[in-house]
Each structure stands twice: as structure tokens, then as C-alpha cells.
Amino acid sequence: MGQMTTTVHPQVSGPARRAPRLPEAWLRATLAGIEAAIISWLLVVVPTVATYVATAAAPLLGEASWTDAAAIGTGVWLLGHGAAVDVGEAGVVSLAPLGTSLVSAALVYGGARRARLRRPATAAFALGGFVLSVLGLSAVVPGPAARPAVALVAVVIGGTALLLALWRARTPRPAWWLRLREAAPDWVRAGVRGAWLALAGLLALAVLVLAVGLVSGIVTVLELHEALAPGRLGTVVLLLGQLAYLPTMVVWALAWLCGPGFAVGQGTLFSPSEVVTAPLPAFPVLGVLPEPGAPGLGLVVLVPVLVGAAVGAWLHRSRFQERWWQAALSGVVAAATLAVLGALLAVAASGSIGPGRLATVGVSAPALAGALAWQTAAGAVVVLLALHPQVHDAVRRGSRAVRARVRRTDDDGGAGSAPTPPSASPE
Image (cartoon, rainbow, N blue to C red; front, side, top):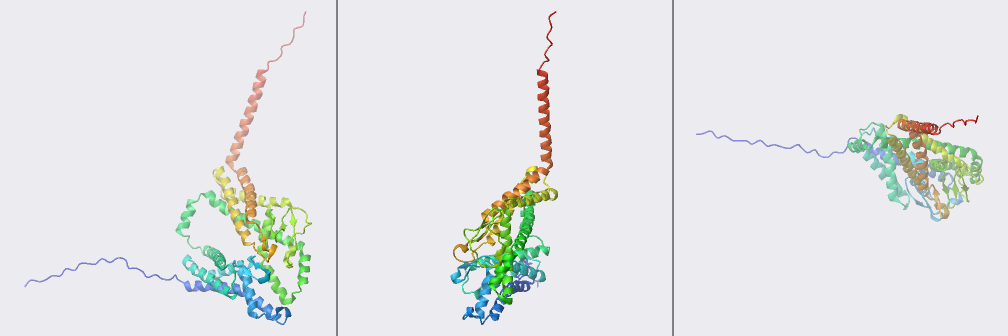
């Protein structure tokens, strides 16, 4: 009886599919985003409720409750996150206290650093927790306007802070970003970096301008504060509210420094060359605004030109371009990038603070962008061309050619005029 053999065919199996998994530390990242939103909200709402509790017996409050105070504080907090809050007869308020926005961004950044987020996928959970918490807290205000805008601004605030946190954590750049960076010419990358340096310098000068305005108008500020008679706790809340609007006023000072100026109500203008004013709300911080009789300071617009010149010198020393036209284009890119950044700041620092003419407050984005573009380009491009060796060589060759032509003209003139023979005298 023969022996039966069984043939076993080997089965080739492909790579095992891994089940989708959530990123590591996703829960810690989400909690960091939620924590940032709640803390920034409490920083505004708690003083508001405390003020209500301290003045609950005031007749002006009527039947208002602490929940109404919490809704008011939430509305103020939402202004820093892109909301437009309807305050009844006082109209719609949409001017953002950029200080609140910066506090939220700082809290998101700090939470990301404490959670040691090092991957974009994990940071996305922190961003989601922050945005959803902002939208959830907005429910405290009955029907705030522009909820989609609140979500968008929350994404911008949280996303910017998280990108900075990932950059500080030395997170590897995505492949698409590296490819895009390598594809961009060096003069483009240099110009973009120069624009950020120019913006930092101009904002520092704007802070200085605002500080000078505060010193010169401190008497008016104190008079307006005393007229309000807010009391001790009210003074603290009033100071905190005005501090929240100081970064907004820094952007106004930037617009003043560049020439276009800003408006606090339709038909008003505060610029270096002209001041057109009208009755303003009795906010003490508005006492820093220039008076109508202030001397014209139109030449102050040369300061941004000098900043552009400093950026041009930095580009020449640190990001030198071999061709003169590449150097000039790096200055043009810096000016164009700075114009875009200035326009975004102008939009963020503009809005409404009431009905009627008070619906127009802030900076004209096209005017500020145009001023920054020509001022930075005028300073940077001129310095870059003046310092470039190719331009020096061209000037030397041109001057030698001019001197040689003048010399030939002189020689030809001397050869063409024969000396006059002396006249013979008759003997």
C-alpha cells in the first residue's frame, strides 16, 4: 500500500493593517486647550461679577442679577475673539480688545509647552479643545452676533500660539513645507524675514509713541477718570478694561506713525499732519489722543523709511544677494509682506463702539498697507542698491566712461583749433 503525501501550499500574507490610533497624549493636549479657554474667560468674567456683587445695591442696576454680569463679562471676552455683541440701544460693539486676544494666545502657548506637545497631530487636539470651549462659553451670552467669526478668530489665535509652541519645541517641519521653502528663491525668504524685523521695530516705535501720548495727556486721563467716580473696585475693573485695549491703541499709534492715522468716530481723523475731532465717549484712555491744536508732525512719516533703511542694511549684511536685482527684489518682498501684515493688524484693530458715527473706529487697512509698502520699499531698496558691489562697479565704469569722453572732447577741441600765425609787419 503506497504512502500518500499531502502537499501544503504556503500562503503569502500581506502586511498586517494597523488599526487607527489616537495620537499619544491627545487627552492631555485637549485638556490644555480647554484650560486655556476657561482661564482666559475667568480673567474677564470674575472681575465683572465681583463688581456687580460690590455694587448690587446701586439703584442703577435695577433687577440685574449676577448672571447678567457674567453675560456682560462674557460679551467683553468674546470681543477679543471676533464677536460683535449687540448691547441694545447702544448699538453693536465689535472693536476687539486685542489684549484679551493676546492673553488667550499666551495661555494656549503656555499650555502646549507644559503638555510638551511636539507633534502637529497632537497640537490639533489642543486647538480643537480651545475652539470648542470658546464656542461653548459663548452660549452664556444670549445670541451673540458673528459666531462663525468667533470660531475663525479662535482658530487663528490658537493656531498661531500652537505653531509657535511647536517651533520652540523644535518639531520637524512637514515635508510639504520643506519643499515649498526650497522652491522659493533665497531673495523671497530673505524679504519675508526682513518684513518681520521691520514689523517688530515699527511696533516698538508705536509703543513709544503711545507712551509719549500717555505722558502728555495724563492730566486729561485723570480728569476723565475722576469724573466717572468708579470707586475702588470699579477703578480696578476700569483699568483692566483699558489695559485690554492698549494693544489695539498700539496699532492706532502705528497708523499715526506711518501717516494715514486713525478715526474714533465717523468724520474724525488723528494723524501727524491733521487732527479732526468730535465729541468722544468719556473713556479715560482716550485722553491720550492728540488735541486739535497740536502742531503738525508730518515729517514723522520718515521714521518708517529709516526703519526700512535699517532692514535693507540687515539684508545686505546677513542675507546678501549676488545679483543687484535680487537684492532689490528682497527689499520689495519685505515691503509687500509688511503691507499685508499691517493690513491684517488694521482689520483686527477696527470696529464699532456704538451707534451712528461711533460705528467707524480704527484704521483704514488699504491706507496703512499702502503707506507701509512705499515707506519700507523706499528705505530698503535704496540702501540695498547703494551698498551692492555690482552697483558700485557700474557707477565706477560709468564715471570712467564719462571722464574718458570728456578727455577726448578736450583733446579733439585742442587739436582742431590751429594757432594763429603772427602777422608780418611791412618793412
